[in-house]
Length: 235
Image 1 (cartoon, rainbow, N blue to C red):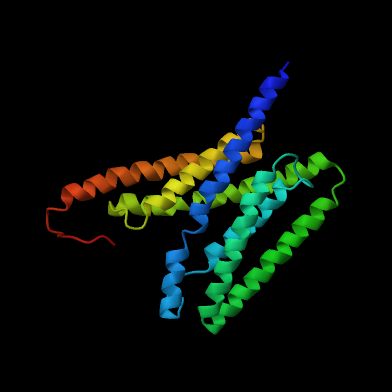
Image 2 (image 1 turned 135 degrees about the vertical axis):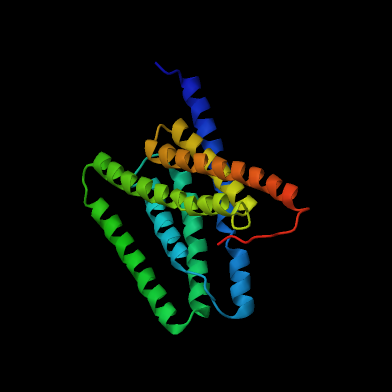
């Protein structure tokens, strides 16, 4: 039988990990700012895509709904971090649409409406589930799948780093923020006995470690090669 003092310790550890995760997530939320500074400066979206912000918004909305008291108990810090994330993504989408060409602007608007419509269906559909546990598990699987898909997106960058032997397209602070946030929420999920939180964030932690190791390896390799002239380029 778990003692009351042990429960209190677990609760303190869980809250500490959740607060840390909220803080570290801020590094991820502000990471697109340099991109949008360039877009505003040039008054055009150039070849940048708005799809990552659309997908990130949907992910934040689903995860925020999972953390709400109407779906899962005692997961409020999951809702707070994803609510802030959703606000950032909406701001980025509005900025992107402001400087996008007309066809791209209409496409983004259609996708944005699709995200809000899809999220509304998820919310109202889950509220129709009278059994609270069925509702929690259903939204839990949705949020878990969404998070795993999001954390899997750096696999392309990891492949690019290995192929080009360059960390140019893998910013260090973005990789570090991913690792710290994922680790914090992995611990949060473990302390809260919630696999829908610790499983996807555990995958994010592993991918974050992979990115940091690759950064350290190829950054040092770049320094060693910096004294020699560049004889070849990579496609």
